Length: 385
Image (tube, rainbow, N blue to C red):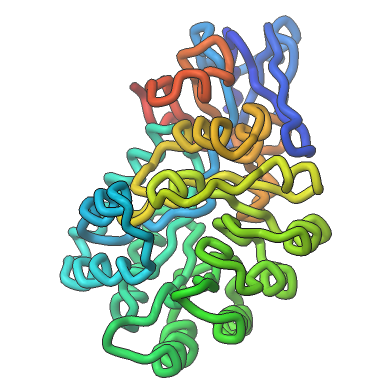
């Protein structure tokens, strides 16, 4: 069945180059079986079986959240309050979430994931990744990815998040590699926190290679707290993305520019940890592919709002609005290596959002204001205000 989306006040289109975004007036598009089959002037629209009336609103591609930790229990607002009072961020704070997650039932975890997924959709996100990493033992890591797989195909096994309190890095990584990875059948991706206070370069390489041997695709956390060489490792294994990238040197930037690895920036983390914001303009000028994601998690970025992350990116990371929007759509698709996502064009999945605003600039211009009117995934309405 063909569906025509028309009466669009401003249709937001994008190209393959970072920040290549433009708007079209009097345009429409058609999708069939969840895939866009035609885009063009409204007066030239082909016949369709049904119509979606945009009511003069702006239409943008659905956002893609390529980095989120949604399987957890409990909150850590006291950690946040402490940081806002001057305390430093410590990865060890993860342990309080691990304790709460281990104690939660499957249904309690599932209910929290559903709540957060609904929030993502309400913020215009149409595709998202979910990581494990708050179980830190065989039983809880495996149940985390199995619950995550009920909500998305973009499941990441992050057993190597930090070392649990009751183990050593050596013993724990042995369990990750020998016991967890072979059972991580519900996952698509393998991830590791390669940073000061988490896992070193050699440990991280061992985890990624073990996951790849079992068919998992690599991505990693790196350069959030310090620069210990994670970018070099990401490029070495052809990781889909390296996420955080708070601390980069010129050699890191050049390595990323020469690779297929996306640098995923997470402005919610810098906001929540009082850390310096990375300069996206340096990455983009060098030719690095850059994505934006929420990193929704209870400790360091408890936001599910992509518009908030876009506004922060523009204000604090030296993105233009166009570059930030591109990073949250096409960039996120590249970070998940999903060619059929991230834009309103023929052959892409019909993921789109109606904004109650004259144009996409209002995403950054009106921070904190709920502009999302409707969210569609594969042509199906998944959120309506």
